[in-house]
Image (cartoon, rainbow, N blue to C red; front, side, top):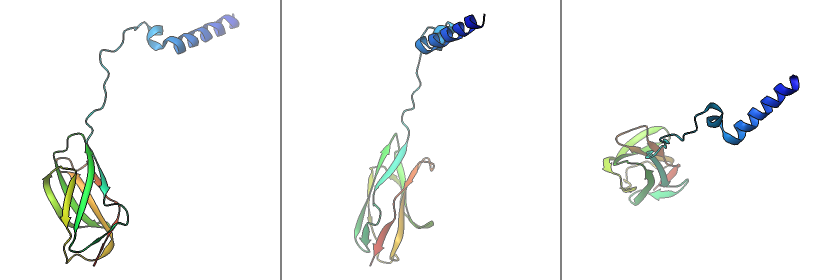
Amino acid sequence: MKFIIIKIIILMSLTFLVNGCRQIFGDREQPDTITEITDVNSINIIQPVYASEFFKGEKMNIEWISSGYISKVDILLFKKDNFITVLANNTRNENSFTWNIPNNLNSSVHYLIHVINHNNSDEFDISERFIISD
């Protein structure tokens, strides 16, 4: 008797492995739809890179890659965790922005750029630290 029970369990296990649970439980039809996640909005800053140096008075090109539908972005300047200024507010997302670095900005190795989806502040990226010098 014990041998028969073990044989049935092995046979059911093999059937499950080969045919899947739909075969065992009688639901042999494929699902009507398969849900895939699409249009996930994301932002990935690619410029400035870590330790790149920029000088007061020059132009700095900020670049990012965005996916999904992000029509407008905000671009902010931070020094460490401290907000410094808004570089662009509610500007069209063109995956780049040219910033004229002001002469009155303090020199530091701790600057960061934040690019944020204007319509959803949960969608953003923070650049690597970069340098602004005299």
